[in-house]
Length: 328
Image (cartoon, rainbow, N blue to C red):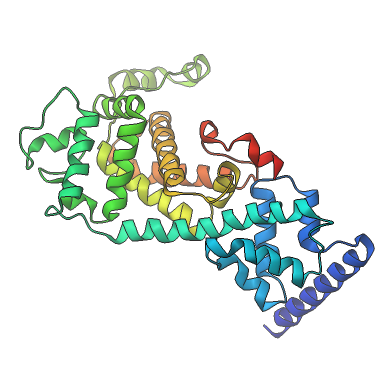
């Protein structure tokens, strides 16, 4: 333990000395080098965040949690502390501001998502009830709901005749995500729902067929494809998206797609992507029964985490940031 502590402080001191030498040689501080040498997006923002958090200046360390309205003044503070002339380095302030908006925005997004997750569904709240009924109308526009308490809810993947009990794990966040998916990605949401109720096998390639024995092929012909409960899986994927957000894994994605602060809409778009991708992954995995859900989910989770390790990754490219990001 003592050796590890000594090694830690040795490396820390060595790193600070190295930074000092590089600054003297280049005439630029670490923040300048990052902004000038790293292209906009997750790679740059994450380096800026790490630099501020690892700074020996307590003042710089706290700048990653300032209020969004104070970011402009924060840039001035950084310039002053680092003795950087803004007139000589005008683009630096723009680049730092973009990074801080993303960093602070991510923290605020976690707080907003957490608030929704902690708010329970209340059947006495007209807004909650309105959202729930909207979910039905978006998914089943040609099938009127006969009663608020009804077995019909099972048709869109709830467990019983009153969906409110299914939202306990993720609170309003689960409902918000499902409604967003059904309202803004209606065609895909309805297709995913239909496939979950009437599951299909994935197409088997010629190579896979050649590797199956006669007995395996005969068994496969009579096997039944396994579906799942759409709404329950949606709440479960909400939990997956929530954990990716809180763990910081989604920083890569959001810093690449949000030119400024990531918002709840960005989170909901990510949920839509995850829901659609999980559906395709479920078909690819071809589980034997619904009891394999946790295994498939965990495998899918690891796959997404691996993708997010790429600093250039954007999970849903069709929501990618505008070209203005490239000018920051």
